[in-house]
Image (cartoon, rainbow, N blue to C red; front, top):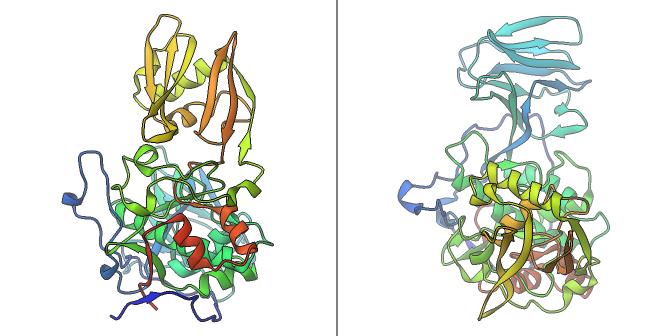
Length: 429
């Protein structure tokens, strides 16, 4: 298949999402070989040459649910996700599906009920409309997976073509009135990021979360700018040395783009497009560019850190009351590469920037917007004197992309600013 390197925006087209189309279960991106993971589980982006057509992405839209309610008015089709010889059943909505000792149990709008002993259940749309869960209508189909722990809770995973998935990401990740060039840039970054996630998670039953743990996702959308942004960049990805770039992005990067070797060293190899450094003054339009001061109660900080440490097998599970806070600096980098928390017994516990931010999430409201902070202990308070940015700070800044688009920059210009050294290639049509 011929691939085209792109220097100008793709030709505009029309996107029609057919939610009733049944998609193939298997994605077209090859799973990563075990030899490509190092001892820390680091996985590069997939080779762009391995992507021969639009893949299917598997997005977890419900996690550990005791029941799943499918909204009306369109009926749904319920079948085995693994055995096509089992005859499907059509169910009137609204309908509720649960899982018990005897298998999947459904109750539909007509009072009909049934039990199926299935490994996993596939819920498909009908010509009358898409699969709808709560207020979220979904492209493609849904697979219900019982929790491996055996407590009868369900994971709900939406299987959809990547191009049908992307408008729902753009709708959630960007503001409605932002320029089309911002949406085009976001579409390419989100497409590249999703391909990497599919590649590294091929062995589990989902690739992405529907939250900011991966990319926020609304399902089907009628947002015209989101639809256009995805369609007009169809198949275009960020590539570096023949591999798709794991295109991380966040709201606002602050003073400098963060270096992935500091933030995501356990996820992807160090590559030039994800190295940190100055990216101009574009992010100063964001209200999140500089913030603070914020005060946190020492007792709540200590408790939050201990709980996080217990869940993540970190030595700080044994930390006593926080007494001192120290930033760990590197000579060649202006932003802290880690933080050290010293308790009243003199024991010191080290955290990477993102570990510290996650450990602080339970310490009060507002939580830390980013890990680029200057802080100290004063009396019974941990005081963050100032902070910069919102999010992890690696890769593209969404506010910066908006400011660049407002100033007349094209989406290739935006992407080359935030992913220096990458190139744009159309992987599939």
